[in-house]
Length: 112
Length: 116
Image 1 (tube, rainbow over the protein chains, first blue to last red):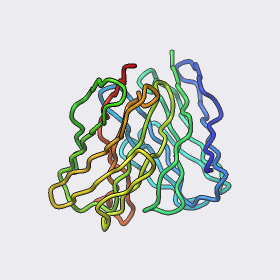
Image 2: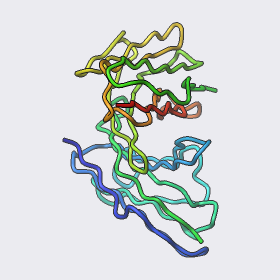
Image 3: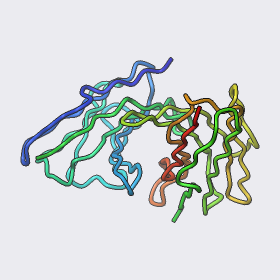
Image 4: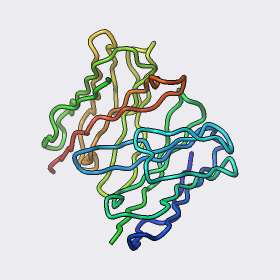
């Protein structure tokens, strides 16, 4: 079974802090994704990566950056956390673009 | 712009009834459609993936159909159980407008409660 893990289930940070969210997949998938999920807005794509050291912006990349130094690991970075980045963050991976996406358990981030 | 709609937003059925969940999309130029389940406060679990060339896909008590020409997909869950209570989301895979990469466009989901 595909396993996607995220470093934290819950995280509380202060405004202005630099925040790192880590995601690891164990199935040698090429593609990895970061989404955020908010009530009334649904899931929105922040960034994705189709290969090591490669990244593409999604629908809402502002205020975020990503890093993919190894195939199995994809990190989401909030350079200077703000209260409007309080959300559920979901990581996903897939073998190829047209293949199933598998999601991690999510990280609920609260920025105070 | 592709829009994905799921109606109803919430549904309550007694145990044993069949569940019928609807998903509609505005642009038929999709590559595939994926159904997910989400339990409260948790991540998404992939249920079924239907390629654009397929009409349906089955897994156990789950059956999903796809009609690209009418922009619709339906997820059927036979003989519902209380453990089926969750939010069900559909998502269509489409190419982004500015490059050759694709993404999933999600519906808002249908919240299902199966009462014992």
